[in-house]
Image (cartoon, rainbow, N blue to C red; front, side):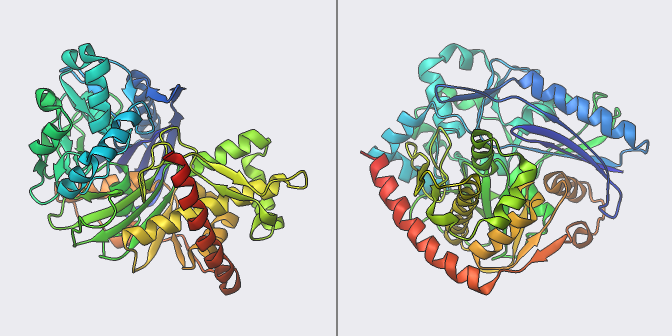
Length: 474
């Protein structure tokens, strides 16, 4: 069997597959996010313990030899470790907002744009550049004590295998990697005031690093590959490889990806170009900060259970009876398809007559508009695949098809873990039928009338968003 490991932001998963891509078993375990005053942190030992636990469970449930394992996980943030891969401090999550003042300053003085023009990376508070600069100014002792500033999957890979610190081109893409040379741009390191911390940037393995497990979670000697991180892994797992085709991940992060062979560093700095194991081939990524997290907040606040969502969407008309939601709930603002660290969510059109269904539908519509904005900015011209936790709601998928005005190739199951296995198989030269592994579960077609309604609604969304961005800057 083949095992994929996906170390998500709030959930760690392991999935076992046979050689046709059929899921044999899945194990998952939640992990905590600590939020306070704009800080969002995670306990690395808890995360690593969850990885070992789900691997123990899934390999115990399928008593077959493990042919190989692929590892993926959340990107960005800063995971400071010592020489053994053990934590120096809590991990700063990609959702962290502590460095927003640095990003504001870099936006004002031109550093932000200069970095984008060099690397294709539009920095946001939770990416490694601003976080390392903030730590250098506020916690220099933790950087002094660290051997490396890793990404999530890199910490797990080092602990599972005992290999040295390393990352891959996908994780390194934000914000230090030159997408043309596939090496760190030392001028960017200098611009961010981090030249004296350059040693912390882990060596880039190109292609992704491989090693053997040393017996925790996976049988000793199991071959494992480190990466790519979750966004490009999901693209592989959803079969998005042809230029122009795209993927929408409706998860904690609402991520839009479009495959491309063109590197365009002009236009408004936003998102990033994710380098892949294929030189000259990138994923133009617009990873918005909040996806299902926005809906989860509304459900929690209104007391609506997840199993009620489909019914509420079905009984509430398009337009949510005038209720509108700008779904920018993250404490660090938004990062795609624009960067506004101070942008916050807005609910309008609410009255005493508004229902829970109005609030839920308006939130789903707002997330759909944000997705359409990201996909247009990323250059979508071909087919669109959709994956993530949001696909479990058929009503939301129909709504998304209408808002986006295009068919959705819905790919269910553990798509990131599936992509990690396909990447590992490619690295080890193991022949797997990628087309069979990535076949969609269903195709959801848009309704022509509702799609026309939402095209007008999307134009109105862009007007409200422009007004909200102007307010955020004052």
